[in-house]
Amino acid sequence: DAGVIQSPRHEVTEMGQEVTLRCKPISGHNSLFWYRQTMMRGLELLIYFNNNVPIDDSGMPEDRFSAKMPNASFSTLKIQPSEPRDSAVYFCASSLATQLEQFFGPGTRLTVL
Amino acid sequence: SQQGEEDPQALSIQEGENATMNCSYKTSINNLQWYRQNSGRGLVHLILIRSNEREKHSGRLRVTLDTSKKSSSLLITASRAADTASYFCVWPLPNTGNQFYFGTGTSLTVIP
Image 1 (cartoon, each protein chain N blue to C red):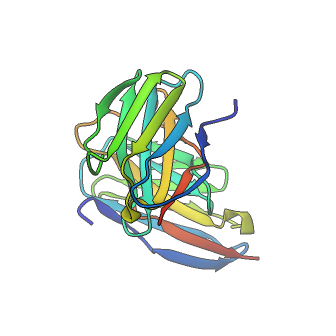
Image 2 (spheres, rainbow over the protein chains, first blue to last red; image 1 turned 60 degrees about the vertical axis):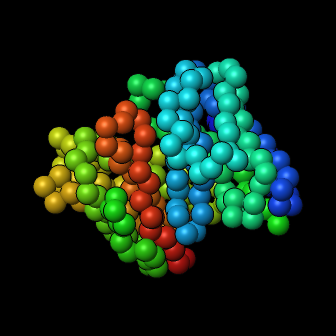
């Protein structure tokens, strides 16, 4: 298995632009998580899906952030409009709902100028 | 932190020495995990210990859990340069199924 796949790996954009991050979970995993990691705040859970349904989005910082999971093999995290304080590494992770271990993707490093 | 903390924040040791990292949490938990993150990479699961276990081993890793003190430790024996990474203590958020709080992490440097 290729593991969790994220794209792009790096994204540099200007303030106000729309940013879309993509994730392909491990095949067969039915839980998917989006995290944000910064030096100041560490690793924060933004939203998680179970069987493609958003279960808890209380970690989404603002309405500028939205996430979708149209099918079991694909999820997006969108920021519109982006701001410099959104600069961070965004991780996607997946797991089996019956297990506690999460498998992380390599992350997308986002820089908003 | 309101959730807990890890110490030390950073640790530097010589190859071959043992490294010990500690974690404290504030809620009641039924399991605790440790993850490793190499620079520029995603987190990788190392080991899980359940609340009815006091100690668990995996290769050169030894994890302890003291639920009365709400603390855990990760010991890496005979460290190698490749062990250089950040190590995170992870425990479930209250009243959730598979949502977790990730500690602040310990940055370990093993000097060859």
